[in-house]
Length: 148
Image (tube, rainbow, N blue to C red; front, side, top):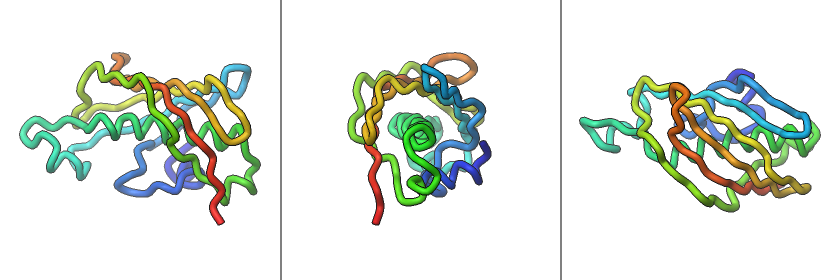
């Protein structure tokens, strides 16, 4: 799934769209998604977040994981018609751990798994990797909100 397809699922746009590509979706018993974010020095947050020692803000890493999970939830729960008027919203974040900094030039690989899903609420476990090294992990809850 390229960024044009991703934008059909998420309402986010630059500079807040934090998933560049989806490379894998597993729809079996374990529902999983793998997404990619290429981190560039041109990202607007690097101007003010540790100038001279640029580090991607941790909250944006978690947001990227949530966006990736939101794509999976929308694909799994809603029909194409329902998706047009729905958005995944953060409801909770738990157990967040940051293991290594993410810097310009890194490529983040988000791996998100749905742990439990009901009609409009999904609990997910997410991990973000850089070069196969764990950078961040979190448990997240998303709620599907219908827009009018």
